[in-house]
Every structure is written in C-alpha cells, then in structure tokens.
Length: 324
Image (cartoon, rainbow, N blue to C red; front, side, top):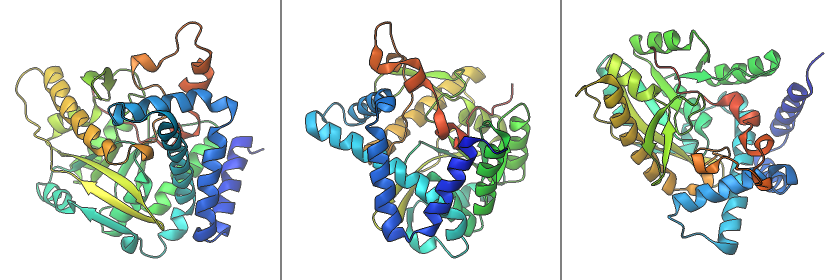
C-alpha cells in the first residue's frame, strides 16, 4: 500500500498540473506563507529569519524582516509548484521563460573535455535551470539523496529524468557515477551550500564559521573539471534568471585538504554574492551554522523542528560525492 507521503506528493502534483499557472502560482505562494505560520514550523521560521539577517548584513528587522520571511516561504511554495509542473512544461520549450548570463562559461568548460561542475546554492528554481540546460543539449547529472519510502524516491527521480537529468542516487556508488559523468564530459550539478553529511570543510560563510561540502572542490582538483558557481532566480510570470559565473581558479598548490579548503572558501564567497541578490529566494531552512543548532532550554528550535530535513532532502543533489 502506498505511503501517506507518497500519496500526498502525487496529489500535489495532480493539483499543480490541473490548474492554469495564473491560478496555481498565487495559490502555491499563499500556501507556502500559510504553512510557514503553523506552530510546527516555528523553528524553520527562526532559521529563515537568521539567514535573511546574515544575507543582508543585519539590515532587515521588524516588520520588513517578517515580510521577507513570509516571502521566502512563498518562494518555496512556487518552487514545489514548478517542480510538479516541469515534466509537462518541458514537453514544449522553456527557453522563452529563461534569461541567462554566462552560458559561454559552460560551453568553454565542456570544450576542455574534462566535464563541468555547476555548484549552486538553494536559490529559486534550480530544477527549472536543469530543464533549461537539457533543452540546450546539455543534459545535467545530479546526485539525489535517497528517501523513504522507496516509491517516493523513485517518483522524485522519475520527475527529474523526465526533465532530462541523469539521476545518481546518493550512496556508496555515487562517487563513481559522478566521476564517470565527468569523464564523459558532462555537466554535474551540485547544490553545495549545505553540509548534509556533516563532514565538510571549515569556511567563513556570511562572516561566521561553518562547514560546506568538500565535494565540488575535491572533484575539480582531482579530475581537472571546470568548477563554476551558478544560481537561478525566480522572476515574475513564471520566468527565471540564470546567473553563471566565471570558473573558479582550481589548481594544486600544496596538500589536497588545504587546496580543497581554499577552493571551497572561494566558492563560499561567490555563494554570498549570489544569495545577496535575492535573499528571500534562499531555501535553506535547516541549521547551517553551529549557532543555529538548538541549545538547552531553547523551545523555539527543537531538534524535531529545525533539524529534520523533511521533504526538501528528497531532491537535494548532494555535494558529498568526493572519492576518498
């Protein structure tokens, strides 16, 4: 018998595809705002509030801050709507809904013949960008975290395959799959602003110590792949803006761990700049810094609230794919 979560996601997908976008989008955004106000998500609101203050250097406060928190959850509602609708949307062309800068950095990287790693933060509609790349003949490879039950994971994976992605399940074989994709001169997309596995490298991110995944830097250093920071932003009326930065300087200068830390720190600086362009589209709602984690007596940040990944983990392409 299908699980309740599987049924819920399939129902959400059916509703999203049954309604015209002009009706579905405001409903999805309103639902995101409404769900955010439930007591169960008090801890996530607190994390979003902190992230908005980090990304704006503390300039947001009071009512303006609360409006930005609400806008972040509305943005997340739109993210889910567009993910549900993408398999149908890509049966036509999504090119007309995307404006981009820097696509030549991808083509130039592919011309080098060693693959391209696109490192992205959780901004806007990152899955939509994958569909856009596939439509341009650059079908991306992503690593997807396994979730329970298996039928829910397979459904998420099937949605991405329909979009044009190659899906690699996170696990012991993920590293070999990513290395194969790079050897085949493919584009590998890695969401890399959260250390899901907890074994990343220490960096300064928004002027605070934390860890970020070592995967993008390690893979680039070991394979010679081009490492490019990129981000996707929502624009009105179902449109998107894709910003593809210049490749990072990736070269061996000393011990591998030191080089990985240096490149990851450079990536963190680029992520800061990308997030600051639209902080209310940054969908990081779990603890990302040591100071985010609950302390004794903090009832607004209970472990069962902010620490659980929830449905978001079902579609995070993990950056923890570095071999060895």
